[in-house]
Image (cartoon, rainbow, N blue to C red):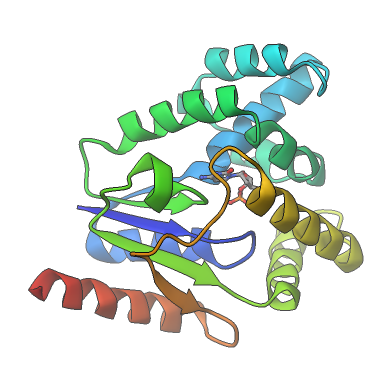
Amino acid sequence: MKIAIDGPAGSGKSTVARLLAEKLKFKHIDTGAYYRWVTYNVLSKGVPLTDEAGIVRAAAETDFTGIDERKIRTLEVSGNVSLVSAIPGVRGCVAAKQRAAGEKYDVVMEGRDIGSVVFPDAELKIFLTASADERARRRYQELLEKGGRVDLEEIKKNIANRDHLDSTRRASPLTRVADAVEVDTTGLTIEQVVARISKIYQERLKQ
Ligand code: DC
């Protein structure tokens, strides 16, 4: 069983996907972390962001078994990840790794292109949304709790910029596929969102 959860930055995907996976005893895969990890490696190796071939090489050399959560949630990585993840060669390489990581298991996989590209045959596809302001506030809270340096206006700009880049890029842009169920999380608690998706899942099992 594959559950694909796609949606923009701050829509609640990561927390929802993690809790849903726990509840169903599925494996949780955060595909944004893969693109963040490539971006971190590109930055730390000093590969110029204008060197597409160099970035693709760095992606191919990346070991995804050792993703370091602390290193990938920085504003520097957030500010460059859309550029790196828009490169078709990077996407091809990363999507193949994601498919391999999820193939043998029941998974809740979250990202931007899971229902459209990585697992187009997923049995359940959810498209999570929330207003841009609410998404920025959530990211702000999250970074604050981690003790990071945060500025709400900077986060709003970063989210708006990523929304634009992620949905207008040519290689597998963020889109809601026709067979995805849209869940608007504005004003809902995480528990309410998880309950709503669990219900959709249970109904899908009966069909
Ligand atoms: O989910 P996130 O905000 O951590 O994702 C970071 C970036 O990675 C996001 O701006 C776009 C990119 N991404 C992608 O292009 N495709 C995915 N499946 C997941 C993330």
